[in-house]
Amino acid sequence: AERWMKDQDKLASVGQIAAGIAHEVKNPLTAVKGFLQLLEESHPHAYLTTMKSELNIAINTLTNLLHVSKPDLYEEEIVPIYLCKEVDALLLLFQDRFYDIKVELFLKDTEIYILGKRNLFLKAFFNLFKNAIEAIEGNGKITIEHFILGDTVHIKMHDTGVGIPKDKIKLLGTPFYTSKTQGTGLGLTQVFTTIIDHGGTLTINSHVDCGTTFHIQLPTKHHRSH
Ligand code: ADP
Ligand code: MG
Image (cartoon, protein in one colour):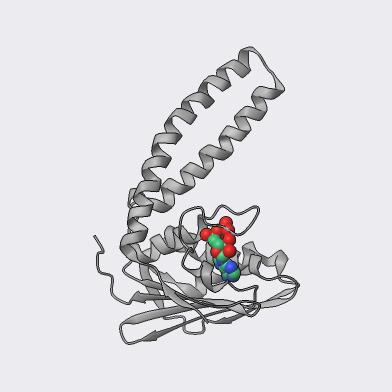
């Protein structure tokens, strides 16, 4: 087992540097893309089309990075988010995977809600759920539960997936850290940033070959983190 909590200051500084670089690199790339576009209109060529689509991949990565490292840019109002309702919609997105993955929900208390920025949270739950699905090879199970203890809302997502090696746990949430060939390494950065932005914590508990639990704790009353 390995429990670990993200150091808020470390994440903030890495995020700020990443955002700065993303911004500086994205502007010239966007300019190059504009000129490629003009060139392609006057001189159509397959190479230009390929160059444009490769540039788009790079620009999209930088845009995602800007979103995760500067959530404040995306001012949203604080609203109640009812987990049991939102999770149903989330499951629909992944339903074609559920012939070999069983999903167990302990979200019976329809009164439980968290206060926060809805779009950021839906994205965070999406990112956590997607990771859980990707961690499961063959058959497996994902369990989601929530409960209130004192002034804290607890949300747990457990999967019976491949687990995370002990020495890798401290890397989770670092922008671009991924163990997947097709990964971006930005999913957990978005999750950490969102939860910290809401005054909460995220704890990870994982056993290789057994599974992983992500444990979110959020204050029941919203207090501004900035
Ligand atoms: P990506 O999914 O694009 O790789 P993430 O930031 O979402 O990027 O996750 C970073 C890494 O954390 C993953 O590549 C994987 O190694 C590890 N990880 C995240 N969630 C899980 C999980 N539920 N089970 C096992 N490993 C996980
Ligand atoms: Mg991911």
